[in-house]
Image (cartoon, rainbow, N blue to C red; front, side):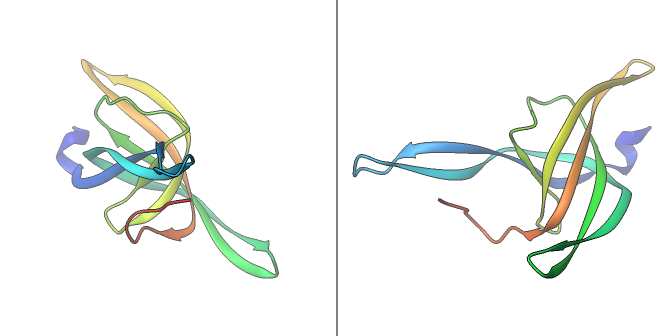
Length: 115
């Protein structure tokens, strides 16, 4: 079954807002889940943005049942950042799993992201 090809170390992050102690707030991506799963490429394309060609690709990530939605992001085992576009619960026989459609836009995770 699919669990046999799952690899560990995939992350789902959520955007959180915390008080900064000066009356304002800090927005940070924080780890919500570190999970096993399988990432499959669906398509790739080039887009021109700000006079620069960027590679975009869409993928499908398969994993066990977790709490995840489209406001979160996915980070693969190579630290590539993907936007979550669609979360769909699936069933194959008696096994339930998530099928998450994601899009890679060229960003790589290098630690905490704050705004």
